[in-house]
Length: 422
View 1 (cartoon, rainbow, N blue to C red):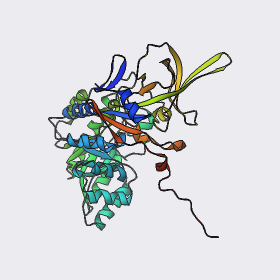
View 2: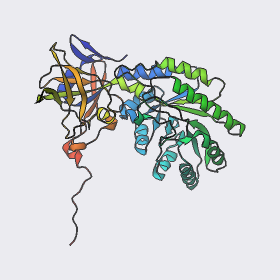
View 3: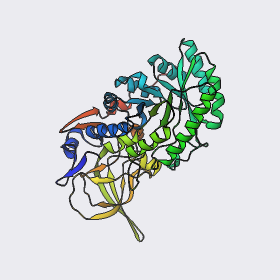
């Protein structure tokens, strides 16, 4: 459930009309419901109530510090993949002992930052990374707590671009090679082996890949125990999907029940990295119709709705061919037509929807792009020198701008016209 609903033909976020916010903030903008964020986090986390666990929100999915602060207050942690995400999590008040650091390309500087901050764990993804962490920790006279991200070679049955657990993907260490690395790490003076980690992909709509993965990790953890390495943490990653169109993802409670049943007999703290399942349907993007046009050629007629949000603001449709429901903010009961909803970017791939049956609209109408809370603003860019949009959060009948719209001046911040001597 989310808190976006129509009242007398007008879309509301909780207790305030979306059009009211648009008048004050301008368009485009991202809009989040605080009540939905809280509800989704607690629905996911409470499924593991009887298990020693830590819910580390995937910062990459929605990194605004207002959102991170909200989850921190609910007892959550953070799954980060960069020094910038670590900075955001700490700025939001996250306890560093609830932060885990994933990602395949950690720099020396980022490792130092993680160690200085006192994070819980590094999820290590290669032998060279292990050696770098050991060297940095030795230089700092510290011991680095680590888990290896083990690649279980499980097909998550999701889009190829967001599949991360197969042998052909760049992530993790093949499970058949991982034992030797664990044994090597266990002998290192400045490494403290504490866990096993994995992440098989994003937007999964089946429970079976998670169960298969956990079964493999559980077997592997027992192999480690036989070698004298007793792990404290098992990180199952994230990836539970949401409904964008006609998907039927598992309910978080159903997912939690299956995981707990498979986890039985293993004395570890379970780490979970939900992202999309919490924030995806807690946010929308609001955009305004600029023009409508019809291109006629031969026997075919093509209708376009041109809006002020483009692929730089929401890249998922262009990048993945991803589907987002789009609805008028104010229902007018007009007729419908099949149209492409496109943005102002000078790319043919700049679209929010293609060949969509859609109500007839006019200049100035507002549209709501639904399920945009995850991988929306975080993937935005300044392509075509477009300032990134505002982010807004609603609580009841109040709203606050939680990120100001960028200005023209911000586009050239840090740039300089050089003067070279003759």
